[in-house]
Image 1 (cartoon, one colour):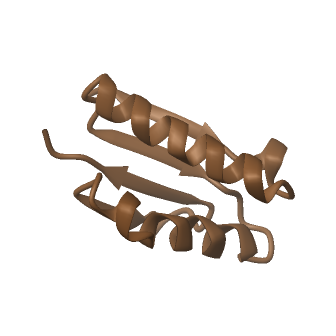
Image 2 (image 1 turned 90 degrees about the horizontal axis):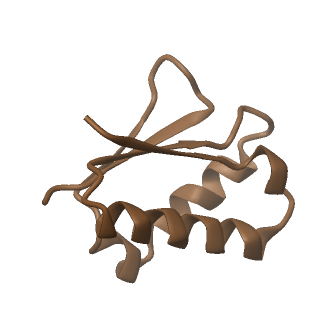
Amino acid sequence: MAKLKLDLHDIYNKSKDIDVALKNIIQEAIDCKIETIEIIQGKGSGQLKKKVLRFLQLPEIKNLYHRIEKDSKNFGRIFVYFRF
């Protein structure tokens, strides 16, 4: 199963860059019919995780994927699943 990975550590403090990176990887997953994206936002204070989850809840984004899953073993990861 193919999977894309997005590590947000380098741009954690650049809100616009985070939105662009998330949009780009979601579009790439759709274009290439990749079923899973792993978003690594790190543990930190939890602000970045909240931002990522808020972005994924936007109506125009939410329509694109099937479901999201917060990694129960690793607080610093979120999985986004697609159905094609």
